[in-house]
Amino acid sequence: MSDQPKKPRVPVSRMLPAESSREIWSVCAEKGTTIDEVLSPSYWSTVGPQLRPMALIEVTTDDMAWFAQLLVLSCDRTWARVTMLMYKELTSADLTIPAANDEYRVEFKGPHLKHCIIRKKDSAIIKDKIPLLADAHRDLAQYLKTIAA
Image (cartoon, rainbow, N blue to C red):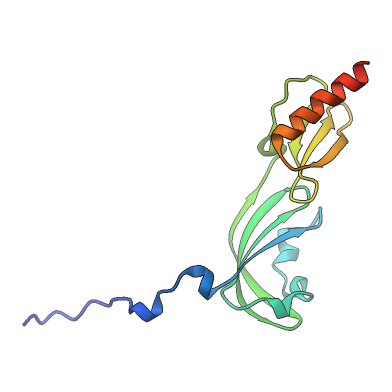
């Protein structure tokens, strides 16, 4: 018999599919919300009862300025303490989709506004809430025909 200590092994009872042992939440914060605000326990005061320790929260803003993944460490009815696992600032270059037009562009503006047709000269949103990229390009082509007529 060997004098070496037994190497630890994970017991079967301690391994579960992640979806059965924790929740993953998605939050779309209002435009202008900072990561520091989201990391504050009071930010979560209205949803504290829904959260559980070890839950993951994916957060982005309406304008998709940044994306973060958070882990709930502890929570109660009016607060949640979270830690940041990952944070990435997004630029307009990340979100702009090339369009075959010099005056307009198609851009994904987040989960609420979705794909948008934007006039380049003043950044005005011509049309928003277009679910699919292909639909946004089709709508842009239709819009260009309408204004050319």
